[in-house]
Image 1: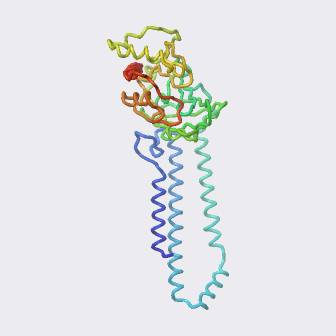
Image 2: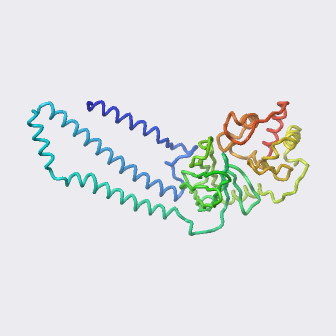
Image 3: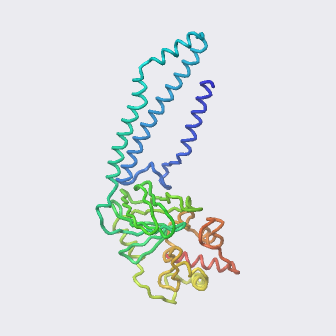
Length: 356
């Protein structure tokens, strides 16, 4: 095989590895290359160091391989059989010190340094000894996230709201299979195991929206089980929680005036929703809808996304999701609707959009 063909194949493999890495600096999506907290910064620095060292070692090995191939090609063209035999005998008798240094000692030093750095980062990001009450509790489901706030009567889905500039504890568990919650810009991932509760510590340096992902294969829609962490200033977070604090479990048959605002479509949508099978799975605080197997819809109109972050929260997406969720997210537990009158779907959409 010629040296040019080896070079071409090597470059092609390097390009494929670059594409497979799938890392992006676009902060509107999840990215491991844009740390936004002290924990993620420590992990990022370790990764950069490992990437640089690995790239240098790879480059040295490739250069030496090309040099060896080039020398072998030129030598074979000019040497006789006797010369080749003598050269092989000389190589056999050479000291193995150089090989031992390049093949054993240097790699051992590199691995040792990486191990020390990794242990240091692990200690820096492990805050389990700090204790403290969790600001939020997250339960993984196939394929969405249930989020509740222990100090407030607030339940949401697929969004975790935290204060900026403060390390906070999130308590994680699973309702079915093993999941793993990972927010690349804010920290490492922690597994969610059925029957067990694991803590996750998050810290954001700046206000903003940080995307996360399930990082443990959990079924057909694992890759589309997303969520966001929203970091607020403390006053803004307090207001957000206060506005959503249900505070009462009393069931009312009246539609709040703030929901109607003179719109009869919203009132009709509420009536259709409450008389449908939706109430057996979903809950809307203060109504007869008390389902526990699907996301709480009490404030669904103000959420940033739908279907665990794969759809924008707008009228078109909400209509499509209600009508035929299996065409959007096959394998999810939400069945499609079979309303005879299409206007009933429009009414339900209007009602859900009013729940802010």
